[in-house]
Amino acid sequence: MKISIVIPVYNVAPWIGACLRSVFAGGRDSAENSLECIVVDDCGTDDSMTTVEALAPEAKQCGISFHIVSHIRNRGQAAARNTGTAVATGDYIFYLDGDDALEPRALASMASVAECADFPDWVQGNYRRVTASGAVKEDTVYFNPAEPVYGSREAVVRNFGRLNFSNATNKLIRLDFIRENGLEFRDGLIYEDALWCMQAYEVVERIATLGQVTYRHNLREGSTMRSAMTRTKMDSLLYIVQYLAGAPRDVNVERQAVTNAVYGMKHLYLSPLGRAYRKRWMAALWETGVQHMETAGAGLQPLSRLVAGAFRFRPLGARLYLSLLLWCYGIFLSFRKQRGKA
Image (cartoon, rainbow, N blue to C red; front, side, top):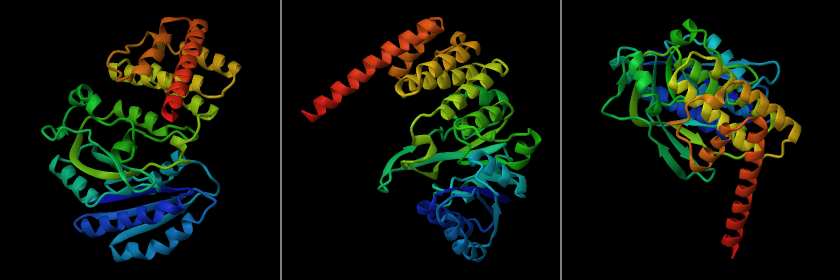
């Protein structure tokens, strides 16, 4: 089996060395498979690419075909993944972020599962989340070892909640599945994984899983997902809800629409975004009809369930409700912080 590993690189100098070495180790562990590593230079401002170029000779020593594809300007992670996908020649493709890493024998294990499962649309493993100090925060385990293969569309739909439809990383994906279904990451969108995964959900028919941890996700300050809420992020969340609301009706699609809408409403009123923007955003959200969708089973945490209470009102009432709710929540957090200092 030939596997293409696509790595977007943008200002990840402290991590890219470990990322590439984990791929090279995968080449040594996976001699029965042919590996192709595609690094997409997204025009960062640090010395990430200096490290990439210095380590490139090690790829050949590990039997890995190594390619660097350069953008002429910074275009974002979605575009970088699309660029890598366009030049990939593998049977399967694996998206790896430049500030993360593979766990030992990840690719070999996933390839073995793919072969045993008669080459499903994708294979996915579990995540290890690591803090900035290098300590393991948690291992996120999604899968039931007793049911490693979801071999039909019905099985995928029925088991949506135990599968990971949030991240494009840590999936060994059949390249023809991507190309035959025209799957692309939306250029310029924040949370591009959330949209891509739901577009993939609409067409995926067979998924295989394995119980081992295959992906090391480094939690770092300054990453796009952990930085402050902005209008660009809020607009991206709204776009995702609009897409899901217009998709064919499916209880899992509705729940994801609700989850994204509630996440957006919560952060809209916890962020310093202006009143006029909040009004426009909420009006556009209500136009999607998400307030009429099924919230049961959406996996909402207690605060998010309270936020979802805004769906009972018209936009004006919802804005007043959220303002009061999250004002009270802010007071609660301040009180708890003061008690902690006492």
